[in-house]
Length: 382
Image (cartoon, rainbow, N blue to C red; front, side, top):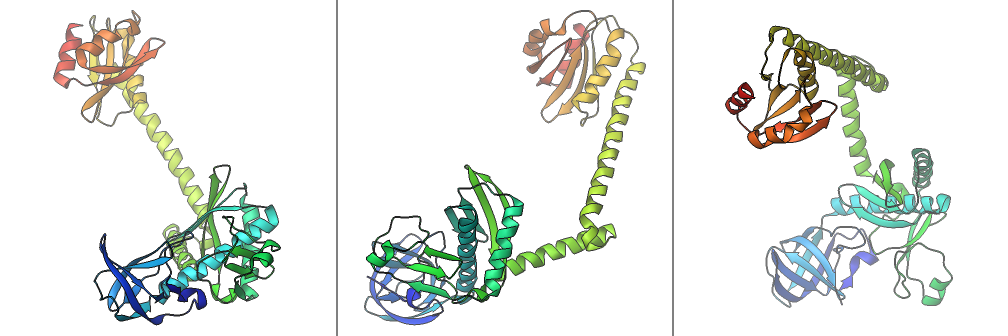
C-alpha cells in the first residue's frame, strides 16, 4: 500500500518516491509509487495536481489501497521520482474543505442538520437534510467566521476502536477502524480523509452564497478563503459598475435597479397597448367582404395583436376572419367568425393548411405550416 504522506503533513509539497508499477490507462499512464503527497479524488474533493518525475499529474485515484497517478508520460519501474504538489490549488481546497466542516458542524449543532452531500469544485456545495432559511444561514455564517477569527487548532487523530465508540462525531459511513477524525474544538468533529488547514485562522473568511430547497432539505453554496475573496471582488466590481451606470451610490444600486425595472415594465405595457390599438385600428381599412379574409401582420406580432385585429374585423366579414403573423417556418394565427362556430370548421382548415391549434368561445388560435400564397389562396375561396 502506498504511504499517504498527505495524511502526515498537509503542507508537504515536495517528496521522493519509488515507482512500483506502470500501466497504460485512458489518457496517460497509471503510476503507483511507494509513497505520495498527492491527495486522490475522494470525499467530494478532486485530486491534487502537480508533477511527478517531470511528468504532469493529470489525476490521482485510490483503488483497493493503491494510489494511482495518471501521468502524461511513463517512468520506469524501480525509478525514484521527485514529486511537486501544486500547493496553491491544494491550499485553496484546504481552506474550503475546513470551512465546510465549520459550517456543517454549526448547522448540526444549531439545527440538528446532517450533511448528506458535499462537492468541492469551483464552488463548495453541501446538501443537508433540514430546511433552513436565510436568517438561519446568516446566524451560521456569523458563528463560522467567529470560529475563523478565534484561530482554533484543527486536530487530526486516529482513535482506537474502543475510543471511537465513545466519541461523538459526524460521519456519512459506519466506520470502525483506521478512522481519521478532524476536530475543531467547540465547533465540529468529523470523519474525513482530506487535507485541512492547521488552524482555522488560515481560512480567512467564510461566505454562504445561495441556497435552495433540495430533496426535502437544503442545498447550500459557499466559498471560503482565497475563493471567498475572489467572489467578493467580482461582486464588488459588478455592483460598482451598476452604481456608476445608474449614477447612484453603491448601497443604493438595488433600489435604483428596482426603479429602472418598474419604469421599463410600464414602458413595455404602454408599448403593448399601443400595438394592440394599432392592430385593432388596422381593421378600419379592410372594408367589408361577404367571403373570408386573411390578414398578415408584422413577423413579430403577438397572439394578442392577432386577436385584437380579428375581433375588430370579424363583424364586417361574411366568412372566416384570420389574422396571421410569420413564426419561423410557419405562421401563427387567430381565427373567428361572426356568423358560425369557427371550431366546427377548424379541422378542415388544419388539414388543408397543415395546421394545429384550438380554442373555444368563437375564437381559435394556433399555427399553419402552409406558405403565405397557399393561405391567401385558401381563404379567398373559403
